Image (cartoon, rainbow, N blue to C red):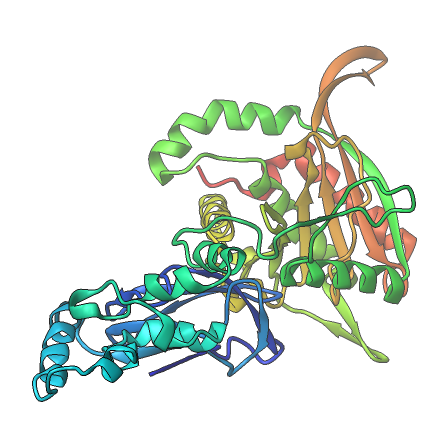
Amino acid sequence: MEIKIPEVGESILEALVANWMKNDGDAVAKDDIICELETDKVNVELNAEVSGILHIVVPVGETVPIGTVIANIEEGEVAETAVAEPAAEESSEAPVAEPTAATQEQPTSAPVNPAARLKAEEHGIDLGKVDGSGREGRVILDDVLAQAKPAESSQETQKGQAGQQQQNAAPIATGATYDARPVTRQAMTPIRQRIAARLLQARQQTAMLTTFNEADMSWVKKLRSRHQEHFTKKHGIKLGMMSFFVKASIEALKEYPAVNARIDGTDIVHHHYYDIGIAVGTDRGLVVPVLRDADQLTFAEIEQQIADLAAKANARKLTLADLEGGTFTITNGGVYGSLLSTPIINPPQCGVLGMHSIQDRPVVIDGEIVIRPVMNLALSYDHRLIDGREAVGFLKLIKEFIEDPSELFLEL
């Protein structure tokens, strides 16, 4: 049975073979995870549709088009495979007469394991020169690998190690700099290429501008402290900061609908729904899963969905449905310690809100200097669609909701 790169989305044309969970020649059972693919948007795990022996065609690190055959499974029950092979040897050897001197010099007549034959063809190895170490002199995969070049044998073994956690493209040290000092060169993964392309697109195809403000986080911190235990007990998840900003953003988007719109050619497309993208950092780069109809979600539902999406992102389980769409994005650089930044728009969206670290600062309230926990806020927007007045008003409204969240109707 052929194992092909499946279609995972209209805009995805190729995939990288990121990891083989089984070695070439291994027995696999139906539904076993045998391979992990990486595209420019999501990772995909392939399961064996039948039981049998796996024959790998495309090694780890290669990027191939959708529909490419990357492996074959020689069908047969896994439990029977190991037993059936010796029986096949006996049946094939039974009618053979006593070997003569001529036949003794031609070991190709000995049985050959299918995986060993495939590997021999791959490396151009003459099976007639391979001494079989299996039962009754059977040529097995290890015998063929022993004949291959040491470097090739080592590389092939490493490629097939289950649970491989290395980079998709191995770094190669080279002394190609002008002063011959060593450098490391590594191919960009598909998802990193996609991130780079989209960020460049945002800078080149939008009139991006950023406005800043700051919010006193005192009330949010008090609410979280006061109600955290009850909230957690009732909903099974902690009350975080992000749900406040999602709620505040939705109310601000209702007041300033242009921030929730997008440009399509010479048209302005207004969204009458609120699909909020939440930027999540992973070991592969930044992804932005989407909270669908976020205006209809409670604080607890927002926190739960964000936690679920973050877990899926880190486990590389996000689907295209998790990532597509989105009318506005929120990113929190504060979790990494950022005090101020200029977030980049996520096209075709026209706005992105940047959150940052909370710091105790001296502020003047009613003519007195007091210490308050303050967060810097940043709104990057497409100036082609959103005027400065709207952008500033939008961010000020978010500030007001955060500094007095009573209007957000917190569900406790």
